[in-house]
Image 1: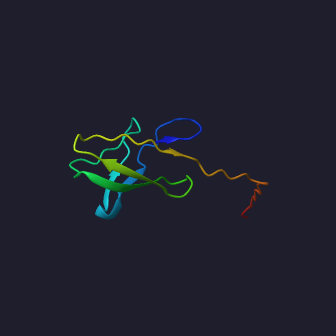
Image 2 (image 1 turned 90 degrees about the vertical axis):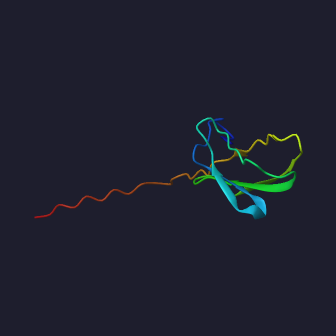
Image 3 (image 1 turned 30 degrees about the vertical axis):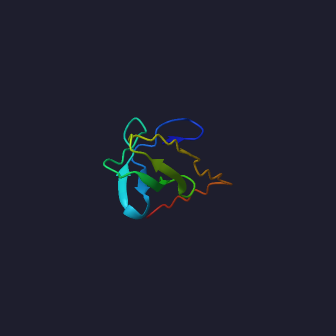
Length: 91
């Protein structure tokens, strides 16, 4: 799981596996793994603070095992229109 613009891994982002309610965290290299899943079709939901809302994908796991799915999350950007600094002098 990476940032859509910078391609940097989103370490600590969460990935949830459908109705099973299993949650894992993204590792330093941007990967995550759900182990010991039975063959079938699952919904994977991912999210990360400061990024656009939850992204979901359907994944089919076969008898052969590993399935690779890429997630590219877009960051939320906020532009400031100005900053107001207040200074108080206590006497």
